[in-house]
Amino acid sequence: MQHFTYILLILLWITPSLLYSQYKDRQQKREKIRAVIPCPQGEYQLVWHDEFEGSQLDTSIWRTAYGNPKPWDCTLPRKECGTELQLYQASNVVLSDGTLKLIARKENVVYKGIYGEDHTCANRIKGDSFNLAFDYTSGAIETKSDTIAFQYGRFEIRCRLPVGAGMWPAFWLWGGGGATGRAGEIDILEIFSTDQPVYTTSVHNGNKKARVDKVIDWDIQEWHTYAAEWEPTAINYYIDDQLIRTFQRFKKANCEDINSITRARSLRRNEAFPWQQWMVLRLNLALNPEAGMEVTSATPFPGIMEVDYVRLYQKD
Image (tube, rainbow, N blue to C red; front, side, top):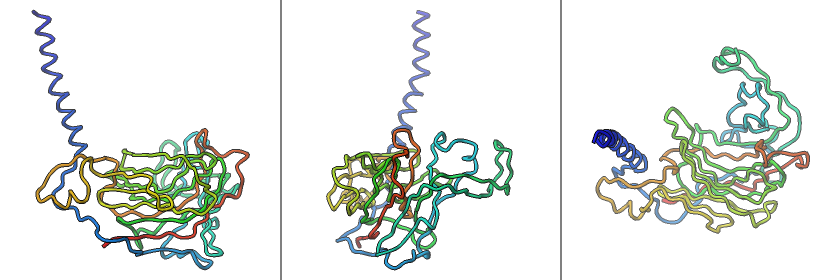
């Protein structure tokens, strides 16, 4: 009897905790809809584009790098800490013959930076200088958020890609992190190592991620279009206008259902779907340090990600 009483007390103590944790888990997987979500109507129309004509990048729209090398990278071999191997430079971004070239080169350069804050582990204080040595350089461009940012639409690129171990091209949207940790990211084109036949599309939101890999059965060195249609309740991915993936915001509701809602309600949500936010557009050719996908002595340099155009279409 004493043992039974003991077991009963344990169950009475544990059960509410389990129920509460499941309740919290369900709450985290639901989104409260307080008003009708306006879904776009009509056909997609071209509203913004860059055809990369001329010989100079439009720096009123684009910057030629994002982020800066981190000073603590100098205390570890770059492969060990998982940091990309390249330094992005403006000189690796070239416009010629009507296309944009992001060029990866094997060359030794030193990045000189300043600590933006105290770093106790390295025994450095804000304002101290540091040097980082790189064995590779490459090109990247990002729209300036104070000039142009995006929310919803069809984002399309026409490009051809280099083939080589560790060559890591990408075309993506980035919403930033911030104190909330709600970093939105939509990866439209990503190949972690172009010598391997795996094409990746991903959606991120904070620590949540939804990734789908597709076997490459086309020649990435030839011209192809890659696109994503980002709408309030779904993201559709296309290669050469062929639908390859749909990722929905809600488990059992689309735009038509949302527009019919006349009262507040809660819907089950795919947590990786981006929050309603503005994003910048990024194109880059990185060099991968990850084992099995890293740059090797056989990787051909220079590697060039060549872009014919970037276009944004939106509905009414």
